[in-house]
Image (tube, rainbow, N blue to C red; front, side, top):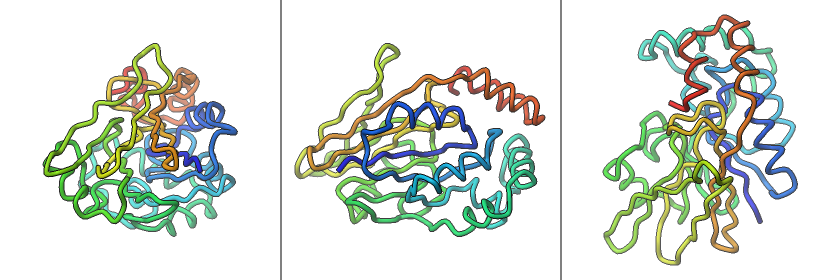
Length: 247
């Protein structure tokens, strides 16, 4: 079984469509690690698309903020402006769906899903020290997390923790990771809607654990079209600009 792993869509319908077009008939089930909305111009479209696909989805901090499940006092002004715009834009049925998303960790199809850290869904996991507790405590051999918008992850075996710098180069579409027996993994598929690891291409992953492989993918999309919609919606210019550089 091949699992399509999506994360941090952030209301970017063009990027999501590009990912689904590339992945099309190559997956059996799909999952999403949260932050369906926020930042981008297409909150209703991406929310409806996930529902149509039957994607198993957990909530992210932006999903909570938009639906009123999380205060926005700690959000920076740019992020808060996007939350306010999204809240006003969402249709009631999509707001209701987002409000009902479960909290991670969630076990499904042989993997574990979290948005941030295993113990705290809103915590960013960037360093080995932050990753270690999740690697040790997760109920799954392979756990997928999002939130950082950085593709890659960590592995652990015999008291040795390794940082996995695995993502495709500029001229490549994907890079493959071999899942080794006896090793535990905490993996980030990257962000579809707003990458921040220096590569502006939409990021996702494909897991085939029956064959012990996880593929990390990057897909180009029409950034200019998304920027045009963002400016028409009067979303903050820093959010518009960062799509070009992937930062």
